[in-house]
Length: 357
Image (cartoon, rainbow, N blue to C red):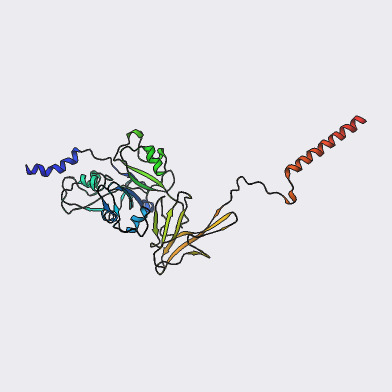
């Protein structure tokens, strides 16, 4: 009888229908096959930011704050209520046409665990037990050991979408959600969302399904020679780069990367970044144009340097502007009218002369 009870947790794996596979297509190769992705984690039980950081083995607490647009002064003890969702930034690696988090997180098995409970309860259904088993070469999902470390292959991708760079966000579909509603929430098109996730009929969307949602990113002036040349920042978040010396955020009002020196970082650690008289992130305005000292990346070969670039934006709308007027108030319209009257007068005069002859 005891043996049956020992088997029960493992039988549940096969009796409860598994969540939909969360594999994300990723066809990128070479340097483009590595990037930063996001997953949306909804806490089943109340926890705090430190607990989320530990679960996902996030190396930098600032990364968790940045992904959720939280102030850098936020303490790790800040509570995360049950049911609330946090964005977790992860390193993504693409191989064999699929994307998965690069080697992390690793989860240590505790009493009462099985691969299905780890999938559903611990990691909120972002990955299936079949995917965990395959990633760890576990032939029998019921055979896991206490204390065993298993790699959790969270879904991600580095591919461009419709020819544009994006940040791929793993979104867990909530009950009552629709494809059109999710598309509107994240600022993408319904057709794009369906195509990316292989959805032919929006009515087939299911609660618990993991969707690959492409988040638009801000354009930037970062040089291809920079160590962070692939930096992608989506709306509603920021990233610390250049050894944490620069904070770059993305605003949907301009869709231009906005970078400034990170507040609270010692000036002895971070080199000064300027464009002549302008400091990084500052602007000066003149007639019909604004010049900004934009972030252009950083190098760390012979010495650590923050690169900058002056960018100019036009402030005047010249599309409907009137043609410049000559000095003295001369008007092309008046000239044409005068010429017409003169020709009419000459024609009448010639007609009268002809009649009189």
